Every structure is written in structure tokens, then in C-alpha cells.
Image 1 (cartoon, rainbow, N blue to C red):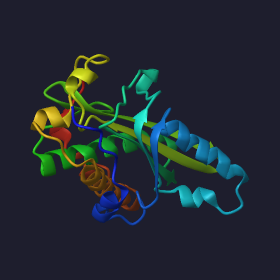
Image 2 (cartoon, rainbow, N blue to C red):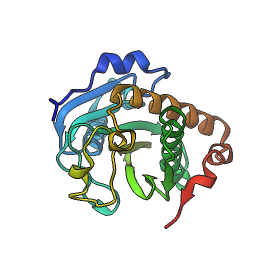
Image 3 (cartoon, one colour):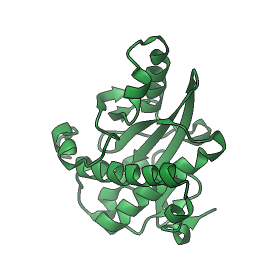
Image 4 (cartoon, rainbow, N blue to C red):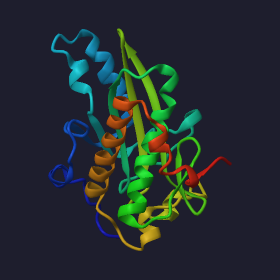
Length: 226
């Protein structure tokens, strides 16, 4: 097996074309959970006089390895090196009843990129997984943190990118990696930048127009509910 390749922040930034999402990236070699760290940062903002709340908007926390990655219902999410394990922090003014749409918006954004740029016939398994022929490529866990009158969205995303599928199926027999589908490794830096570019575009459109139907229409025929 070739030696591990660490994430190249400069290459990522060279491909990022956003206004604020991902402009600040916090990188770890190993962490328990990127969602946990996001929550910790938000709680620290309570005692910060420099408006940390505003500065956190759009921050991405990325780790090569998560030791306690989790999915819905606290299920274990294996997070070895070679994947993309990250959390996007968004300071949101969206009504709480509409927050579940952000998980789906994130899934839509990722699916669009996998189809358009990587020719992967991915589909969304409601409400927070992305599959390829019944096998999981990606999982999304969106959590909220209330700080004073502020609501933060912590969008935790795990994508099986350049991982040997044999290492994934030890935990989930229906998991698969992009590398094994394509037969070659792909640039994690470019993939992450493309996802953030698309996600910010979709998110800004939604909060500016309140029109979720246009975004949903892009993938409504590629969603499974079982």
C-alpha cells in the first residue's frame, strides 16, 4: 500500500471559489469528532468579546482521522485516513422547523458534484446518506448549537474517497469508496473545494429566495426512501 498522503491546504484553496464557506479551514491529523470540535468552538464564543460567533460562519473543520466519528442515532462511522471527514459551521437565521432541509441541501450538493464532475450515478438515501448501487459513499449528520440567540448548524460530512473498501466493510458491509468505484484515487482537495462551491451556491440561493423546490427538483428522481 502506498504511503498516506496528507491533505494539501494550498491546493484546496486554489480550487475554492466561495465567498465565505471554507475560507477558514481548521485542519487536524487526528481528532475525536469534527462535529464535537465545532460545538466546542461555538460554546467558547459565549465568552469571546471579538464576535467569534460571526467569524465562525463558514468555517470548515477537517481531520485526516476521526477516532469517534458518528452518524445518526450515534452509530459508529469509521473514519480512516484517505477519506474526507469534515464539519461546516453555518450561523443560521433559518427557522428551526426548516433546518432538516439543510441536511438534504447538503446531500443534493454532493450528489450534483459526484454526478457532474466524477460521472458517478449516486443517489440520496433519505434523509442523509449518499449511495452508489446500494452501497454507502457518504453520510451527513447535521446538529445544532444554540448560543445566546444564535443558532449554529454543524453539518458533519463523511465521504469515503481514497479508502480500500475492504477496510470499510469491517463496520458496514454496504460501504464503498470513490476510489474503488473509479478504479483510481481522486484529489480530495479538489473534491472538497467543488462540494463547498456548490453547497454555498445552493445555500445562498435558498436563504435569499426561500425556494427549496428548485434545488430539490434537481435530484427528486434520485432519492430512495428504504
